[in-house]
Image (cartoon, rainbow, N blue to C red; front, side, top):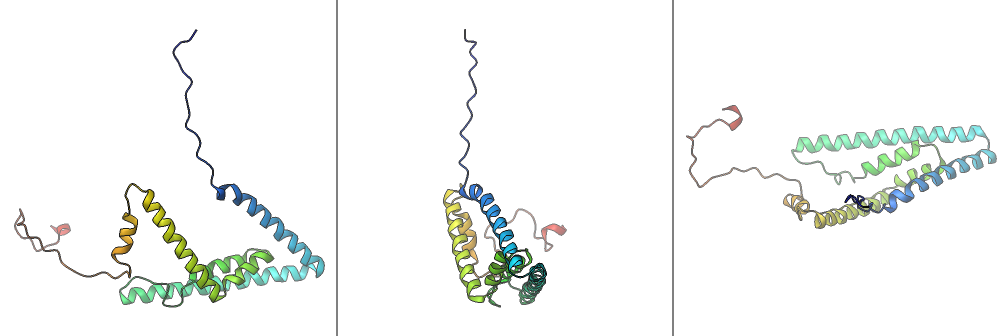
Length: 188
C-alpha cells in the first residue's frame, strides 16, 4: 500500500579537497616531530640548552617581525607621501615572508626555527615571492574562467597595472535636464 509519498533525495556531497584531508594529518605529524626533536636535543645536551634555544628563537622572531613591520609601515608612508600606491618592490619586498619567518622563529621547535631562518634569506624570499605571484595569477585566471562574471577580475587588474590614477574630467555631449549648478552633487 503506497500513499504516494516518496523518500526525499539528497544531492551528493561535494568531494573533500586534498588540503582539507591531509592538512590535519600533516600538522599532527609536524607537532610530533617537533616534540621528538626537542627531546633528542635535550637528551644530547641538557634541558637548559633547549630552553635557551627556544628563548633565543622567541626573541629573534619578535625582532624580525618588528623590523619587517616597521619597514612595511615606512614603505606605506613613503608611497602615501608620493601620492601613489604602495609597492613592495621599492625596498626589495618580502615583508610578508619576513614576518612569516619571524613567526616561525617564535613558534617553539627546531624545524619551525630552521624554516623561519630559511625564509630570512633574500634569494629564498625572492624565489618564493615569484612562485606565490605566479600561483595567485593562475588561480585568478581559473576563477575568472569559472565565474559568471567572466574575466572581470582580470579586466579590473589590467586597467591600472602600475597603480597610477590619471586625473580627468567627464564631458557630456548631451544637454542636462537641470540648470548648471557649480556645487558637487553631495552639497546641493
